[in-house]
Image (cartoon, rainbow over all chains, first blue to last red; front, side, top):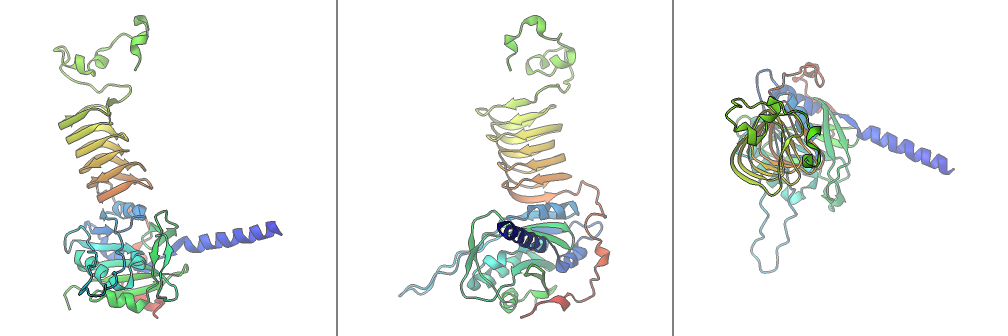
Length: 214
Length: 170
């Protein structure tokens, strides 16, 4: 019985590993097809602390990849009695304005508290060229008010349209489940081109910055 | 390391090429051209601190502090775990086990080990970043010929087809 249970657990683990392994990312493929043109060297910003192999993959495909460890902001502290305002910690990506053709935000958005989503996406938009792309991943979980502690996961690109997601080794941080509309609202005026639900319950957001400000 | 312990007759007869590599003999007037020496790479020890431009024609291990510029054309540079380099680096290949603050240009490969830390831009055909390594900067591997077969064929993706068909809107 114990062996059977172990076998069942193993089969479950294998299925989970298989399900969470290689995933199709049509949004990524679409963005890479646009930017990886012959003779061009697109600028890519990789915000993933645990996605360096993806950065190397894109560099080997001809992109110039900047790696930046993005620290998700903490929630805005509550207003103290008598205080007129609260100091929000600044969100700063140390890159110049309008530099990048593609920004890989991976699943950072899940670790941003709801009240800071718009601040983060505004900072992402700042470093994007007009017409540039943004890729985000987010877990597809029931929307809840409370966060839960979780690790950021590692992402590895195995092809232009294939991503392998594996457990990360970083510290646990609060992860918030955001609804599609909450993310879309925060991304405005960036335009969400597609939201792809993957087998492992991860949503892939393909976002584009308008060529002309609306 | 312990050559002094060996009897004199055990040492091979010093050839001109070997003797020209050492710093003491390379300054001799009879050695007009420095040739790369064979054997273990030269080492800059932990207590050594250099400010300025460091050039060489042999492999080098830096475990000390360098502030300025390091040029090892065609040779391998290893930054030891105690090495602290605040300099532009140009070599055939570079392995970073310590800290480098500055741009690295390599003709072959740059490798950052788990204990390594780099702040700067890397330009090399091959780059390896180990898990646990620290890197902030950009990677440019365009010296490598583009391999169109790597990855899936982008032509299989129709950019004009709306991708939102599989979207999970809620």
